[in-house]
Length: 202
Image (cartoon, rainbow, N blue to C red; front, top):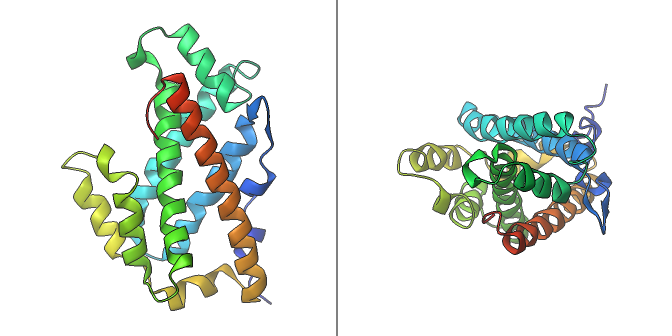
């Protein structure tokens, strides 16, 4: 029996996340983010559990807030505004902080993949190290950086990584490209929302 393609094993792609003038819909965004966490299973190394656990923890925090405020937080933009309105002190905005860190984790993943796909002779360990340096590293303290750096060195060889997405490769890679572009668009949009709204830096 043929191995299913990776994108057949996740419940929602970032392509399927509705983005309207009102914002990015929260529930499908979180569902797509859970699919992103599964990509690290293809890396085949327990060192990446630190990345997975970090992203999953922030997904859960944002979802908890959304479930408690399903109308006022049905888009990421409304969630941020509601959290700000109900928690005047920045330190009390748990959902905003969790969403900020979630988006940083998504940005890191997107950058690592984009750099690697754009440089066919480059190994994943090099690309993801560049992605880390261009995203999460500046927000991490001296205790966390070595843990993530270790994970970057544990990346598989690209020759063994991309085939894990399934066959035929041309079809799978087209799906990966579309998924990644949609992810990048959402991260770029929300980075501007955070900056313009004074919510923090992605």
